[in-house]
Image (cartoon, rainbow, N blue to C red; front, side, top):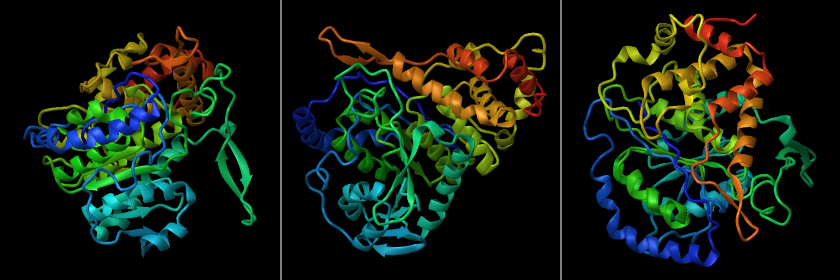
Length: 446
């Protein structure tokens, strides 16, 4: 069972460069004494089955992944040389840096001294979009393989839209490389066109920065990761104390996640923890801020396909039965057994209170994504694209001074996404979805 993900919107003010730099050093000093006590509370209070982990949105302005000092907070001490697993071989850092894809090199450089201080090694997948850090070098290969399975399954379910791809020839390489194309956006003239994509003012860029994954064997390691993140990304400072009380996290920006290998209860699955987080981070990296229910539905579908069951229960407390992991299809059939004449309504998905676990909402979100995968697999990516575009437009507002800012807490409604789904599929789509749920996820649309 994995700690819970939640996305809470931060106030979208653009961070002035000078304030950001000063904030990093102030954070380093404050964190030295203010934060460590939070982690001592533990992630679940010792209750069997309890689960909570945190995820937060990115800042209004996209920051580079290595925006702070490359050596991290003051006082960092060097340790053993960092090794990097790449192409199946554990290599010296400098040698690996010359071989790994260019897209992830800056992230490796940025976290090198931290890794030396903490005794962590790294692993990079062949695409350069997954960077895994662990203090157990002998487990890097296995964890990386699991992360790659999750990323591959996500790619199969929700591939990058062709409209956002171009082919770029690498000088001297003699081959093309897939690169993001800047799609047309509705950005006002002269505002924010260098931050993200044209319609993406004040939001992180898509598909550019790698996903960083931290394998943790004990809770104290999490605080060292959080301290470094807050040092480099001031918008995370307010979230830090809350995150320190929970095991693991997945952040919208920067794309960073962590999972705990040490069992927190009898049903704990470290593999499922990793798979679910990779799926969430892949979704945020590709489609930006999605409604919580939709992002988790995607993550649960990937987890179901890769692991063979559901082990991630966001914000849930209480005992978890072993039979629950594979029971969601039959549970949905019971929930909708008397709904033949009354189709599912949008509120049954997005009236899920944030930072809570609601069993019925969780299962519906999983069922929704499963329905599209089983019956309209080529419509899932277009729907996610429309969700991305809705958020880009709907969360942007003009300021009195003639500038632009992001609306804090803006969420695209399920009602609006249902309207898009009708356009993408058929008018009776909600009735077909309800039948699918009522039949335990076994209905095929004719």
